[in-house]
Length: 152
Image (cartoon, rainbow, N blue to C red; front, side):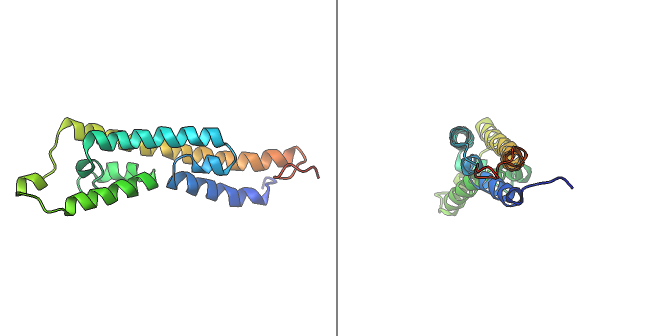
């Protein structure tokens, strides 16, 4: 078994979990602040642009679009927020039955694709945060330094 810093076993799941909850937060946790902010803005803007294009009622819908919803769940914080909005809009009483039916327009499909792609891109960001957490711990150890930069 390779010689690994025990901090890596703690930092890897924390960085991955934070990156899953809020895109870019895992990188910010690891000290890559600018990268984390760029990832946060990029993924969040992509996700919420999809919601704006497709509407909250049809874009994040686990019943109608279950596979896309799984992809959207890779960006947990955005998906939970938009699903809460979806539930609150769906619970409102409508004037007639036709208004409660979600229209199947091309814009809804585009919105679903935007949000799904944002989720799948965040999956790559999660893996990157985990890999950076592991490499930062093992790199510090190879250089004869502990994780906080002190020489041993």
